[in-house]
Amino acid sequence: MITVHTIRELREHVRNARNSGRRIGFVPTMGNLHEGHISLIERSLTADCFTVSSIFVNPLQFNDKSDLARYPRTLPADQEKLAAAGCDLLFAPDVDEMYPNGQDAQSIVHVPVVSEGLCGGSRPGHFDGVSTVVSKLFNQVLPDMAFFGEKDFQQVAVIRKMVNDLCMPVEIVPVPTKRAADGLALSSRNGYLSAEERALAPGLYQTLSEIADDFKAGKDLSDSLKNAEERLNQRGFRTDYLEIRRTSDLAPATLNDHSVVVLGAAFLGSARLIDNLQVTLNQAND
Ligand code: PAF
Image (cartoon, rainbow, N blue to C red):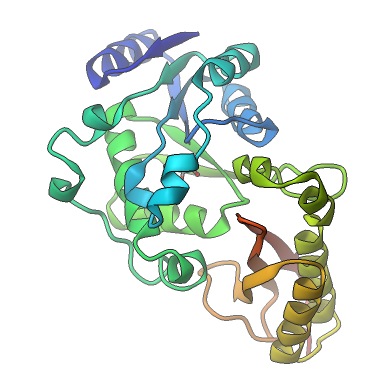
């Protein structure tokens, strides 16, 4: 695997791959890679793509600067994991390469409606930072396909809408969340958990599963969410949000919807964990 740090080198390698007839698959990341990221690389390789990954801890998407400062940077270990997985090219730019005129002078891509509420509500400006950096990365890499983990369900919806609204010629491929044996969704942020917190951490997925069961049973949604929040807090978390949304557009769900997603975010110690669970019914609840 080749690692490049500049847009110029990146474009040269991608052009060569394309000229030799390859399609380009892209896996953008912020590094500190785990099996979830590797499953995205594998998905791109399965699609027979020349596979490009990026590692860039994007300051624009961190509303909390202390969160940015402590975000793990593990480039050598990440390079080894990507090479072992069969990734062809790694793009690891620094902040000046991505924002040469400074972050305040950067044009911003804002994706309305789907960026609001959920993580967008708790982390103001977060999705503007995500859509801006992803659109820049898409213009740098020019991929045919790009692969995103469904753990960040709202992020996938934001990127999909951005690509659609701005007619970007890239296919967005969502990839199912990778979980530990006890149900915890793999995340770079799990590294912030103490041993005691790690033992409690599957409580988030457990709570989402219980909300999903309530939905399947046709129980009142607001009662279900209120009770679930109490249980999640009793399990040692500080709930940020628990919600049920329509899978298609993330609009608030009703009991008449067939395809919904239960989404949650909660603090465990200093770590903010997010997760979601999709529920598809054969027929409406009524
Ligand atoms: O999901 C992530 O790791 C980031 O939000 C992304 C898509 C790489 C943009 O910085």
